[in-house]
Length: 143
Image 1 (tube, helix red, strand yellow):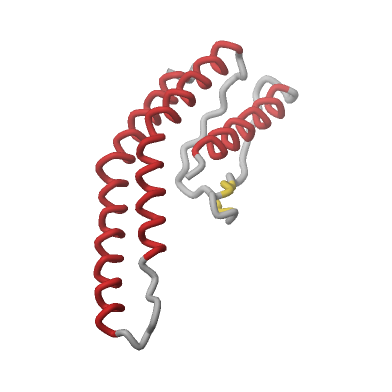
Image 2: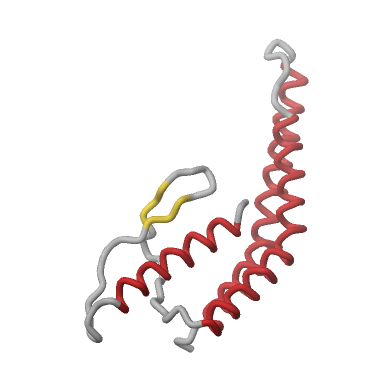
């Protein structure tokens, strides 16, 4: 997970939009599609993504940076646990297809690890994500 890249990408996109909007007349219409680059490198259209255009004021940028740093610090242990589980899952790849009993045991262990990864996302990552999404919105001058 690279939350920093995501946050920087979104912030850069917002700043570009603000720069465009500020060079236009006082009243303007802004429309278009938002595209997000995923960790895997895939580019996806941001359907149903809330986008706020805010002035790039020093206060906003300072608040944004504080929220981002706090998020990265709080989510770091969750990311480390996820990475540990992912490495464990990869190590459970079947070694010999002729060893049916061993393959079945590894498959069952793999399913258990995947379930732990899902639970980690639901119980530890999602609450942090919700908390900092709210904090980011509160840092916005739109509040």
